[in-house]
Image 1 (cartoon, rainbow, N blue to C red):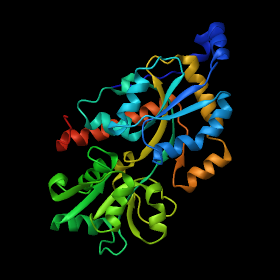
Image 2 (image 1 turned 120 degrees about the horizontal axis):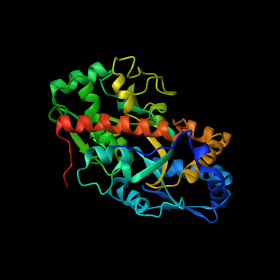
Image 3 (image 1 turned 180 degrees about the vertical axis):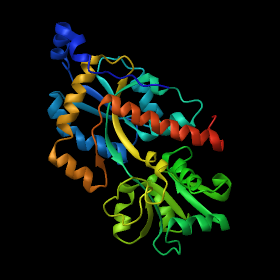
Image 4 (image 1 turned 135 degrees about the vertical axis):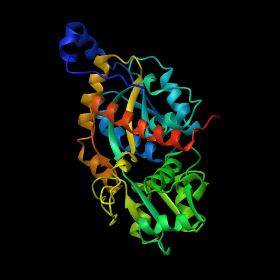
Length: 325
């Protein structure tokens, strides 16, 4: 599976005709599809960047939440849109890494989209209840091997579902699907609540969703999946624990259009996103929520998404987690 990119030949190859096209785009408001509901990580990211991005674009950005099927419904709306730059997608790890890896009947592939950037990374942290006797990843794995451990998620086939299994697998649990019980919830907030009320033993999810609980000593972090420490989480990184493969286990937000998006349009988005992500208020707001603002060009974004997808698919195939329905 591949993703389309554009390279350094763009400036030479487009010539005068492309210059005219770039001057004309955009001539009207741009529809920005958010494939998840209000208040979630994707929605927060999209609406926070909307003002500085709109200023860079110079036209109105019409934000629309088109939800359903784990981000697939909104993604299909962009897949089927004209590739003219007037319908773009706030793509997310769930819609474009986890879904393609886990769902056999997904109505799109990565090849159906052209990514112009990934701009936000959300570290993943694993936590237990603050009163738990589990104080480290070693303690957690020992408890799993003894039996009776469960983990919560935002639903079957979600990043949180895959995260729980991947972490256990990387730490040597031979049958993570059988040794720990998956307890799916209706959303990420409910997944965290399940740890707070003792319904489940542990949870691995975006650090931004856990930061306030950790700060208030309600949840106890055990690990972050990044190579570098995460502010507010005084625990080992995956690399500290010798598990660098877990660096692929992060959330992210990017922007994509339909496959066939013209080079000149894609180049415009690169310029706009560079301006928007340099906005001080945007950066401070997102970083205060635990996000890492890291603007990737199309080649970097494509390589990152493909590596993450490949890692997830290998795990899904190895453990037989593929969802056929």
